[in-house]
Structure formats: structure tokens, C-alpha cells
Amino acid sequence: MGNFSDRVAIVTGGGSGIGRAVCLQVASEGGHVVVADVKEDRASAVVAEILASGGSASAAVGDLSDPVVVERVVAETMSAHGRIDVLCANAGIMDDMSGPEEVSDAMWERVLRVNLTAPFLLTRAVAPHMLAAARGSIVYTASEAGMRGSAAGTAYTVSKHGVIGLMRSGAVLYRQRGVRVNAVAPGGTKTNLEVNFDAQSEGLKAIGAYAGNVGRIAEAREVAAAIVFLASDAASNISGALLASDGGWVAV
Ligand SMILES: NC(=O)c1ccc[n+]([C@@H]2O[C@H](COP(=O)([O-])OP(=O)(O)OC[C@H]3O[C@@H](n4cnc5c(N)ncnc54)[C@H](O)[C@@H]3O)[C@@H](O)[C@H]2O)c1
Image (cartoon, rainbow, N blue to C red; front, side, top):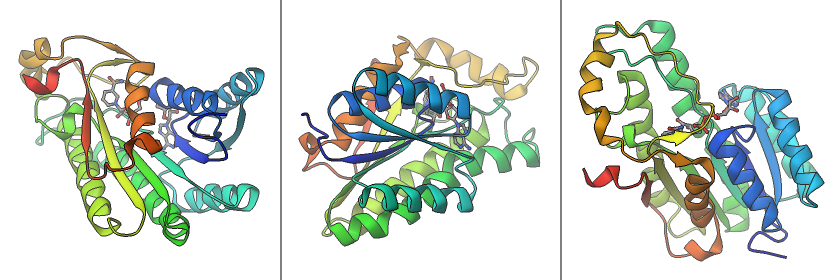
């Protein structure tokens, strides 16, 4: 038994890094976790890890920036469990630190789709079920780049500012309807986040001047703990919050 007994959580990007750590913690606290990831081997490995330790989990594989995949994952979860209590819209990709004059159409489209459109599609798909139950918690993984212009390139920075807008909009509109919506802003965290930095990028050269502000690099489980807190009933009076888990970078 635990904080998530009888609860069902969908965690995107659950196969690696912060998402994986969220899956392990929610499962250890008694929840059933839908480990959603585009990489099948990663999702399966996390499911196996949870099952081996006596927890409950299933894999959902696919690109969650595709609305067809999102609808399928949500429909399968509802049909298997009849409820979705928690959505952690966490999957994300980094950009190449390009400034506005350098961003390619492909980079803009891909980063905005995965980091912003996917959380919107997931929210649109789960919200009707949560609202019908008058119960639910949505937590987005934003970023320090959602609060400042010096933590990533233009596409990533815009995508994470957008996620915070998505969070605030949902928090207000679902305020009287039993569904809480929050976000965590990680700072530098040890994960597999794919980086594609072009050392020649003018954006990277400019942002490099701020690199010392990052400070401490966190373990994924430290960031996950903030996400799981917001997802849990311990945060029953918290909605619309942006919680930094960044070792103090937010104060610089
Ligand atoms: N690592 C950091 O320093 C850091 C800092 C701030 C914010 N974040 C954010 O944390 C979140 C988690 O990233 P992480 O650092 O754990 O990275 P990670 O690469 O270790 O994990 C991300 C997972 O998401 C999956 N994924 C990527 N695109 C997907 C898609 N379209 N559909 C389904 N799954 C997809 C990947 O396969 C991967 O398993 C991201 O939103 C990232 O922007 C990370």
C-alpha cells in the first residue's frame, strides 16, 4: 500500500532519465504505471524492473507527438483500468542551441511537436476522463528554459515557455473541477537527454557565457521526487504551481 494505491499513472518518456525515476517511485508507492516511450526497449526494461520488484506496470510504445498514438494509449489505459489518475507529460528532446536566425524548419517543428504539442495532445485526451471523475493530477516536465532565455536554444526555450502556459491555462480552467495541473522545472540533470550541440552555433557561443549558472547537476530521482509530490494527494491544495528542482539555479 502507498500513496498511489489503486491509482493509474501514465508517464511519458518513462523509459529513461526523469520519467523512468517517476515510474519507479509511483510503482513503489503502489500505483499502476503506464510506461510510455517511443523506444520499445527502454519502456520494456522499466516495466520489467517494476514487475521484478513486485510493482504493477505496462508499456505503451509510440511517438506521443502523434495524436493517433496518444488516443490509442489513453483508450487502452481506460479499457484496461477504467481510470487515469495521473498524467506525467514528461517526454522531451533538446534542441541544438540555435538562435532564431539559425533554427531550421525541421528543428523548430520537431522540438515544438515533442515538447509542446505532445503534452497538449495528452492533456486533451486524458482530461475528459479526469473531469468525468472530478479527480486527477497532471504534471508537466518544463525546464529552467521555461523561465529564462539562457538555458537552451530558441526552439527548446519557446517549447518550455509554452508548456508553462499550458499548465497555467489548465490549472485555471479545471480549478473548480477536481483536476490539478502543475509543472516541475528541472535544472541540469543526469539523464540520456539527447543533445545535438553544434559548437559553431552562434546561440551556443552566446549561451555558453551563462553556463556557470547551472550549478549542481541532479540525479534523475531528485527531480522525479518533485514530480511525484505534485502528482500525489500530498499536493491536494496545489495547482498552477511551477516547482523548480534545480539546486538553486532559479535564484540566480
Ligand atoms: N536532463 C536535463 O538536464 C533536463 C533539464 C530540464 C528539463 N528536462 C526535461 O526533462 C524531461 C525528461 O528528459 P530526460 O532528461 O529524462 O531525458 P531522457 O532522454 O533520459 O528521457 C526522455 C525519454 O523520452 C522519450 N521520448 C522522446 N521523444 C518521445 C516521443 N516523441 N514520444 C515518446 N517518448 C519520447 C525518449 O525515448 C526518452 O526515453 C524532458 O521534457 C526534458 O526536456 C531535462
